[in-house]
Image (cartoon, rainbow, N blue to C red; front, side):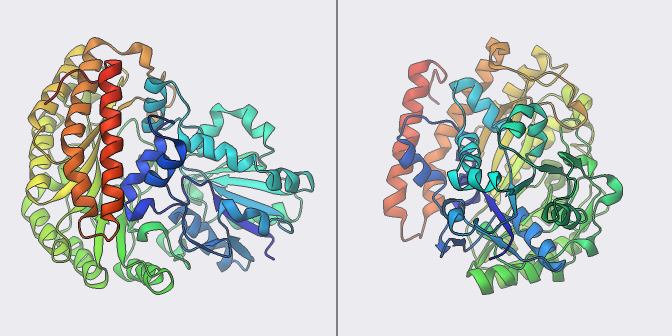
Length: 493
């Protein structure tokens, strides 16, 4: 058996009923429904063949591909079947997205509901498995990577308690082989390895995945050019993969996994192939045409309001291409604030090519364009950013009123110190003002209004719709009742 195993906890090793955005449910704590039912609704276990998942998180697949390209024998296994394969393993690589629930969404839910999120419980549960603890005693090395590893800086006692050998922060393609080789040879391992800029892989140094990724997620680029103060991605250089490479990974998902849909991943899909904050018409159209031709469905991981508004005709043309095979598609959008003043302080390039003073109008226009062209966004707001004033919150509340008729989900998130603001203080639930509570209430009422319609859209034409739709409606109703009972949601629409 291979000496190197890769895995992730159960909240990550799921296809979320083929809806990537249901994965946000893992950020919530145990709540109004039994845990077994909640996990079935939001993160059912991925299908496996003899304990090997038919698909795995994309980041894990990239590490798998890199190690295989360097000649290592490596196997990605499901966390519930790891006992079958760990007996002879010397290295266990673990993918971490939000291991302690400190990310913006999960920390917000945890703060309000006073409970630990599911994703944190399952991550700890993975490392607590008897078979892993036994393997540690005989010398197993645990190496952890992924977008959430920054959180280990706040949990040094956890690292010691669970015997984590090495934590890698950053794009690991150029360093993972060296670190794994050292682990196999019982050589020195740094407990925390931060990948330097000089070690950032070029496009040619990033391997194609060789096994399917969950929900057909495929990376089309890395990095971001907007430079928001609260985001760590802006530290990474902007790179775009050529169409051929993207299509090759889509072929892997289709031919090996039978996954005939694709989620295109970048910090702003609208900017594919561009060198600045203006979309490249030719490259964006070509990419989406090629993907739509090959796949039965498509979604975007993220895009920006400014990119949509800067070239509305291009956006409409792209929407028409995508809707040749599907009536709608989804993405994640960062609204963050409705205040021009706060936008200028913490995200001055978020509105580019428009000015920060135009941000509220950019947000209104972009949301309207998405509604009219059937792109359904899951949007975020940030509450408690350093230097935030009452006027900033009021302007965000006013923006919420302006977009209430836009088909969307909008989630307010407490500020988490990341990016250039990593040394600032966390925003806590106890710091909420009456204005913050009013904003939270408006977001809840907006989401409750639209959730039924979004449930219908999500399961339209699916054979299992008659089973799942009533369960999600029941859950939404129970959450709304609980919110009103506790005073979080005070009035209807």
